[in-house]
Amino acid sequence: MTVSKALEGVRVLDMTHVQSGPTCTQILAWFGADVIKIERPGEGDATRSQLRDIPDVDSLYFTMLNSNKRSVTLNPKTEAGARIFKRLIEECDVLVENYAPGAIDRMGFPWEKIQEINPRMIYASVKGFGPGPYEDCKVYENVAQCTGGAASTTGEIESLPLVTGAQIGDSGTGIHLVAGILAALFHREKSGRGQRVTCAMQDAVLNLCRVKLRDQQRLARGPLKEYPQFLNGGFGNAVPRAGNASGGGHPGSVVRCKGWETDPDAYIYVIAQSGAFPALARVIGHEDWLNDPEYNTPEARLHKLDQVFAEIEKWTMTMNKMDVMATLNPLNVPNGPILSMKELAEEQALRDTGTVVEVDHPERGKYLTVGNPIKLSDSPAVVRRSPLLGEHTDEVLRTVLGLDDKEIHAARLQGAI
Ligand code: CAO
Image (cartoon, rainbow, N blue to C red; front, side, top):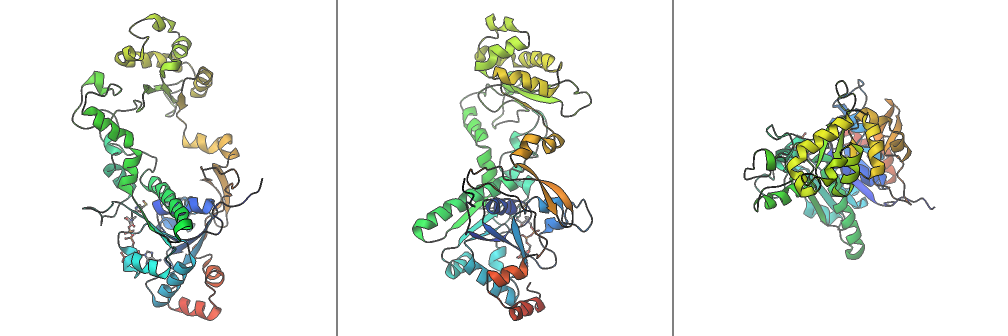
């Protein structure tokens, strides 16, 4: 096998901070792009010092979102900084940023100017909202979950809207942005020109919630049969929260397993898929359901879901969740034990595939991170630690931009780097 980096030769000017933008550029770096992260001199990305677990050491928040990048400190708002920034635009293929709306323009680099400096430049941004009444708003993860349809459709039936632990607003948008950048890079091969790529967090979350917009339209034609409200109360005029009911065509539920009284994760999600239902009924001791017209069709079972899952739970409570999984898998019954972060961190199969990796850092020592979940057969990702603040400033200015000692010294005196 020839090992080569898929994005070898692509240079990324990384003006990202916090989570959404860094998620995007980290994936590009895993694919082999040379990602040059620009950080404010002296401070760097705010996440370096947020939620620290070790005093004065880059936080896990930062180290887990910025692997495989180089760090350059640069203030484009200074005279020397603007000159260096312009040179970087000339030398890079992609500029990625997720500052507040207008921030890069205010640095003196609107899209028109960037295009003029380098017509091949692909300029990619994450913002909270697309053009419209909210385009100037600053947005964080949970704001996007609330404004993109996730929170209104997540949570217990009669309870508060809930945000999810999955960072669908930040990381979800960053991943969408990667797709746009790769499409623009491919297009540039033919057109010779770069283009503007934008992805709003509200839009990305809505895209991830498209099944709920599906249901909104179905609701206009009648009740949603797979929702618990079908039996327990009825619907309003918008898609409701549905607890843990399955969003797909087959009913599912979280049920307790042995040990649930003391272990908050002793649960498993079981899907009563119609094809596997006979095997599921048999294994839980309900072969009788197979000849019972109240249970033996998916349509009939819609009215009995509470009883079906109560009986499944009586069975799952006799075993631990991994034994339930081991029993259901050969029967082709889709199921998912609730795995804690502790269990995932210790899961050998995830270590073997490089999805969970241990990295060594000069200041914090060894730490775990999530490696590239996207696997390329000829271009496997090797995860390298995140850079220290400004670790590569001199190196990049010398080797990428060709600056000499005198120029670097002058920029440093100005506080530009
Ligand atoms: N040198 C000098 N100044 C720099 C700099 C550098 N290298 N990099 C950034 N700055 C400046 C910006 O120019 C900006 O200054 P102005 O406001 O004067 O133009 C300033 O830093 C602050 O940037 P900000 O407004 O983006 O930062 P914030 O902490 O107030 O807001 C956030 C953070 C995330 C809410 C905002 O950046 C945002 O809405 N981004 C778009 C949406 C997004 O990505 N959200 C997800 C964030 S991940 O949870």
